[in-house]
Image (cartoon, rainbow, N blue to C red; front, side, top):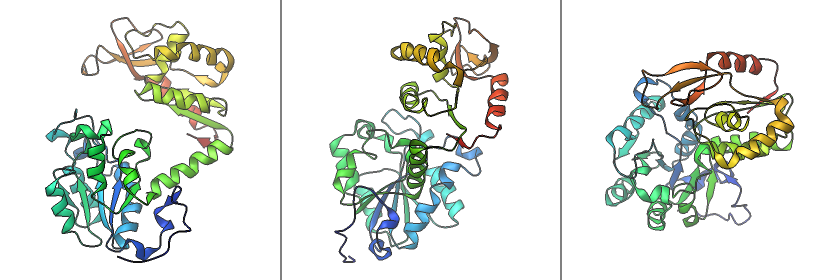
Length: 324
């Protein structure tokens, strides 16, 4: 072990570059990354993998034993071969032009043996964290088992950092040093600029299916934004608050009154979809079609339509200084 006095470091707000280079030599470093990349076989250069490379390179060049962990999809707390991270390990090895080891679990004796045989600079990708129910439940035993794998904890999965899961929350208390990777560091610096004073015009784009998380973020951003382009399932809460027929689309009912109030006070800056991609269900691919205006009762809206896409593209290309 490399000895050193790090008592003057602020362990609550540290990044991987805050520790001396020689600190990492031989250390087992657990890196929570976001390799939630579906259809890896048809995506030659996934951005989520590419954005993790600077942190991985930094640690391996300092002879750390790098243990990568991620989730992939929603396997319902049991192994699912279709959601294995093994193909991700192969693609990562291609990108890094080097060896990336893979183990078909994320805790247990097999994992312990593989890590014990690692040398400084080696990379190991663990199997899908969500194959264990303890991940999403933030189970203490599972958190402790993950914590026992490493000497240092690094979070470089910005997109999952808000979740109170074992790998993003529960295991952290088992480490003296809980560090941010370069991806998380960059995102936090960008978000700080937005919070303290974004360059204007400032446009916010929101979409996706996870309505509650997005609406909570919008509550804090609408006052700051010059324009808000709303898509995905979030749009249907706003449209429903206006009395527009949205069929069977997902809606956050608890936020209807808030959305109506926002539209009455700041509706001039909020742009909602004009047309929609709809279907009877997410599995009915052949039944998907475009509709303008109202959505029939038997159908669900899933995303913005062609006309809305063109309009949003024009808005984004019109000289904005900050886009979130």
